[in-house]
Length: 471
Image (cartoon, rainbow, N blue to C red; front, side):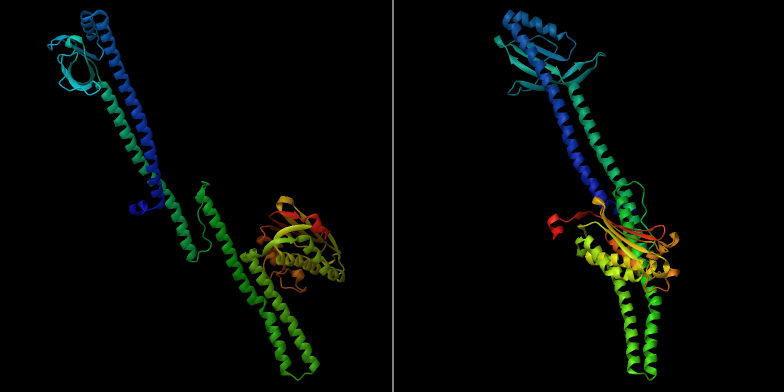
């Protein structure tokens, strides 16, 4: 990846923003720790000097000048880092481990900072920094009590140096880490972009790679792949519809045209003309029914029918469909039994749900009745509580083989045993599309004997209030 492109990515810029926020908070915390540590050491040093000064002044007040001189000489022999100097009114040294009075002016608080020469064990002289407080005593004597703060300054310098290195390391690691993270993220996004370009180029079977990390990019890739699967299914369905219309509707259109042409070619009576027109209108109605079924399937698969979702009385829809098809079932020698849970409401599309139930009953009557040997059809509607609702249509006819159950859901598919029955082969296709629209599942099961078709509708169903149900 080009360096300039990496630096311009949103991921890298976000990494820099987080780095800046982290550095600001870390610097504030480290600065607070440094300030507290350095302040504690300074306060401890000042408190020690003040305590030593107070002790010497007390010795002067209690035992006089000889006691003060003796105390200063004694303390000066201590190998610790405390510094002492006592001078009389003439500037003569009376005691202490400093050779001369510092040439600096004390501050308003009496404190002074100065450099002095400290002799090492090897006899060399080192320049150290000291902090001291000067006190004016009776008889114009001057007392200087201080402390060597060279070690304290070195410790503060080490802490400052460590903090600088820590901040520098955080900056370097943050930039490197941001670059690595950005590179990985951009590489995965590039895979998505390449796949999208391939798909736009016509490779509809291409899918976005999933790394298996189960992170948000993997979730995005999985959702996009599901969307691409749906788009591919719709495109394949559209091609199939086009092919099926070209093949399956060409024959009835040719038959209709030939009938009208033959009717016009020979002399005929008014009765014969009327019969020919009636047959042509019937075939035109069949063609219109096929086109209407295709439009309903297209609406269901495209999801445009979701705008018409409302609370539907599913029990009433099933009851109305049963009343409509009960005479047809009796004519086919089939007994229609009902097991409908009363006052069951479901949020869905009224027209499509009614059409799906009607299609299932129509298919059962066509393929289970008459010479097929069936004797009954059972329609059941029941609630599944929080899981939704279920519509079941079962018969004891010849059924559908296991190998054909997926195939019969496609458009214009008709099994060999149903070639002589009227229909276009779109009934179960519409039922399948309506089921998917409602987020449900369509199952074709063995009824032993016969076929059992189950529509499992997703989302929650509910009961109507009692007073409404009673009406």
